[in-house]
Length: 201
Image 1 (tube, one colour):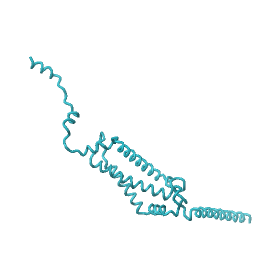
Image 2 (cartoon, rainbow, N blue to C red; image 1 turned 180 degrees about the vertical axis):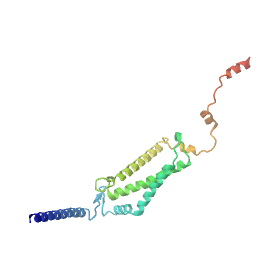
Image 3 (cartoon, rainbow, N blue to C red; image 1 turned 90 degrees about the vertical axis):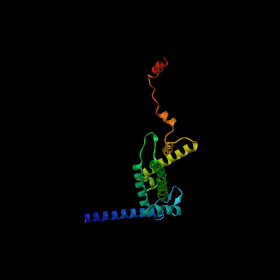
């Protein structure tokens, strides 16, 4: 009889604990309007905000995920095709690939922005920076935007960038003779003075 009473108590305790967890979960859902997502992201966008709803629908759209995966694959192919050259030289293929990098940067920046608006940045459970892959994406996007900003500032200030020699690579004509002489100096002949002296005699 005593063992049966102990078993009944444990069952009752388990049921009470289960009900308590369900009540806590229900309170949490009620606090977020019946949605497990945070009630507000970036201190601006609530769950009923139409812009946040649109961002959430786009991010959770299956086609959007496929587009991002294809963009990542195309970016990997572009990095594999890119041919590094000495002394910052370039060719037409590298110039086109460098222009294509800006398109990839725009797509990845848009993905980052949409996910931050939909899920929050870092303070909430399930936020954008709570995922390791998202942290990697965020660092790559930040470095790309930082590099683009530096290039733009240097261009406005008139400072030559690393991509300046690429324009010279498009010049397919023969080099200027003066430049050719500068790159390939004619060696001096040591016995030239002696021959001139013999001819004078």
